[in-house]
Image 1: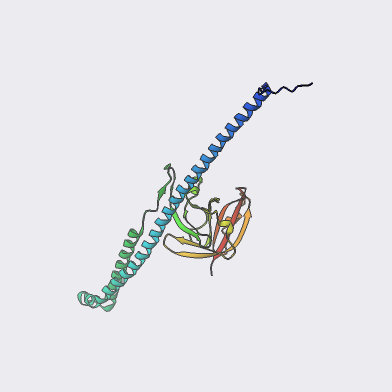
Image 2: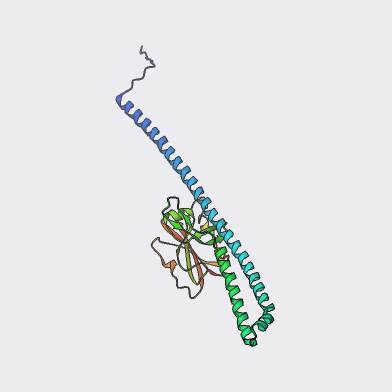
Length: 271
């Protein structure tokens, strides 16, 4: 009669040891890589949030500058009115003191008005110039913000930095090319396309006819109607052309297709 021998002992061969060590190394390596990726993701998100806060601080500075400019404009109007009224009241006194003709008195009166207005303008310029200069964290780049770009339908609102570089693109939207804000020509700005929706992360959702608002540091806002939205190659710079037939135009550019393409949104001043 045949007998079946049962034993708890397992014979481990060299081949089995090799496979066991191989799988063990792979598991350890996978865990290590996962930890690195998670750490990188957490740090990257922390870094973006830090730069986002810097961008919002600049935006608040620009809003303060706008409010101050508006207040200064009101002060300027009042100062001009007071100066003019004062000179008008003194008109007859001037004639008596000078003992000259009415023409001479008028010339003196006009000169005093211009002097008072000029003085008021100079005071306005001195008081309204708030600091608008910043330095990158490494202290290598000095930059400033020259406008605010806003897309109300998408909740996008960022300051536009007057220069562009890899470091500045981390902070906010950058000006790439074009005239001063809201002047004749094509005002071209670029920004990162973050999956979180920050910067131009929501720009792909913009529709024809949507409004883009551009506000300069003096508080002047012009609305632009979106008329074009298309994808281009990274080497295509035709969208930066300044041939606008004497019109005001704005162009927003961001990455698309995982960075292999560029999304372009363009609009003209609302009539």
